[in-house]
Length: 284
Image 1 (tube, rainbow, N blue to C red):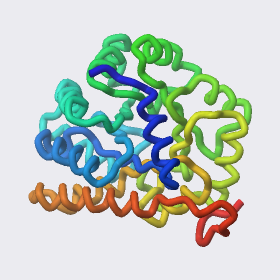
Image 2 (cartoon, one colour):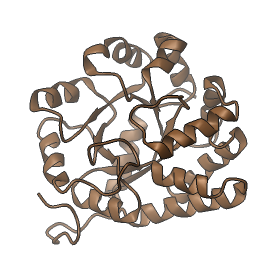
Image 3 (cartoon, rainbow, N blue to C red):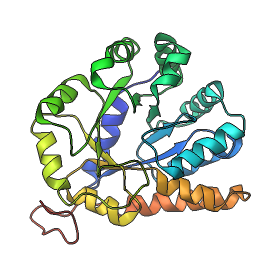
Image 4 (cartoon, rainbow, N blue to C red):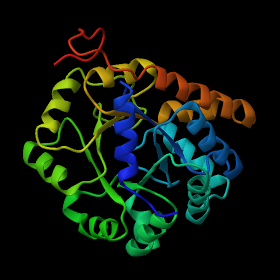
């Protein structure tokens, strides 16, 4: 099954038509082991995920806080490698139409070979790739390989992104833009920046891509705030990993906890009716 970048945009559009933001849970592939990880992918789909963001285990992930770092360490200690992760991705693609975005670090792409990596992504049904530590100035090879293989190249923006750089990122990216809801690493703090609504408006002025917010999305409260700020959806990673960590040794309980949590996130993702004052959401 080949990748199809339009599937992510379509999933986000379906959620919008239902009056809510898209829910995109994140896990590290192979955490805590291959079999349980496959069960977690199923559980997130069953819980109502609109798309999945999945990570390749890496020993030194600079954008991730201790919770995701621990998840990657568990996968690596279980012997999970990139080949195993691609096998999980192919298994998911064979049974589900829920789109997948892959979050990776540049060293893993280089070790694989840029052309080979994006070709394998396409063959495994990966619809989009975000290379978290690859600056735009050095991204030409990745952007071109992604385009050749029909994989969306997702780029990241933060409240610190300048206007000129924002325009460059918006022009180069595809699929969606990953909007950091707060400055820092994943899972460091919960909550979103007070000016998120203003930031969303700033990005929309220069880009027509869907906007998905991550970093600091700890649960339904933050999902609701992101929706009220006008984003198209929320990416939730560390909070999912905490539920995995809380049930190590009991895979059934772990899978149930993740399924229930994704359901809670989806239930909180409704947008306020137009003209309805926001209660508790971020203010400009």
